[in-house]
Image (cartoon, rainbow, N blue to C red):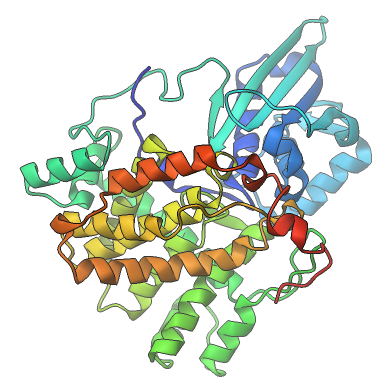
Length: 471
């Protein structure tokens, strides 16, 4: 089996909430199915969801994502303000226009099947798409949404068909550290050299800054949106209220004015802590509302990296574009290590695979940006994950809301704490290596009961009444 080779843009993807594995992955699978079939000749389509996709698919919008993918919309540029109207039309007319061109009969109530008691062996997030053609031929494909928006078709090598040769071969954290030490470069510099395999340095920088722009816009929207989140839990959005309280009436009408107002507001310890939480809440409230977010490395954990980077950007000293690029490159490499050595899928590993990984990514990235060595950067990532080990995924009502939204604030704060601890220590003397904690996370995932892996069958999901408001 070929080795998995990942880019910064594999870890950070622009998409639509609320879940990278339950929304973005199935969306991409539907797109891929149409691309690889004789789409204009299709007469009927039926989609079967298995395992975790079936158990929490309604709350995660899996059925919505499948319909949007079949209808030919792309999650990167889909106008999220039209989502409700688009889905309502499909439900009302019982028709869908495949790829935007081939209109067929399609009843979501019968043509999307939730097989809650059935699973497929490769991964808990499985879907099967079956098409009948005008000539009577039937074609069927099975896809696995393996976390972070990654999709693998049944029988194919998850590493891809055409592996490339990277300048620096990195299979684990030890490889990463040895390469950095031998070449006398930082983690972000190593990642940039490897990115040149796919595109120029200028293109990589432009792409990263665009990712950061989308993250900032997501935070800004979330900090200015009141209301109740969809799904039936009646969760009240909090980021906008916090934003108003922290700004104390300071006028602002756009993103740059808002950032300036934050910098001019109180910068005592409590205020900064509140802002970090506000940033994280804003992203994940947007995510829960089917808004535009960046998978980092998943949607459920999409608030951690932006919150920590926004903290560094707003409260740091003269943060430049090159600092943003450095942060994102380092964070992506740490995310890659976890994906290659363990998992970034909550359906496989619980919430440690999402919030834990995102916290490790943010901790390592912040450490490098604050002048830490490669050893200290990896120590920060290790510390952050070490204190998320065993975290379960138990979403109430199958929605990415409770406890998911608040967990992003915790992951962000832990990342900053882990960074500070690592910067005060000697990374070369750490007792627990990053590789050891990645392996431990996987062992913990294997031992964890399935009811704590994004099934809504254990933990808070069965202890808290669905009509209880979040406090």
